[in-house]
Length: 159
Image (cartoon, rainbow, N blue to C red; front, side):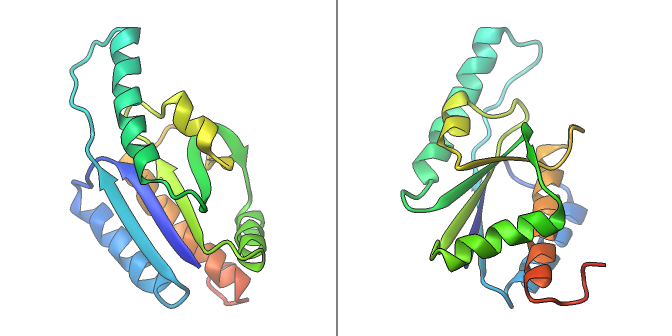
């Protein structure tokens, strides 16, 4: 199965880069992971509601342009549905059995995601009601993808 993370912004912190690199390396044994970083709109607070909407709309257009027509799309959003690690693994395994070869994960920028991106999702996924930095969310997602693959194969990483 091919996995693709589409995210707004670049990772700046070395420790996050190192963590993502480690889980990407581990995931290579199970399939291909591609990470696509899209340009983040620059802005200064405070922003009006109209300015916020313009920013997430522009970033959303970049995201939508990257999404495949035949892929299954998870959008990460705190208002989405939560899954346990086991249920997430089961969902991925089910997609593989159905012949879905590309699964894409979308992580928005600091201001979130446009409604158009959320509407494009096949599944809106929440990891927590907590707010996480969008850069750190990439590392958390990479770890959960690795965990899911080890669950699917019955390996001992997940305890």
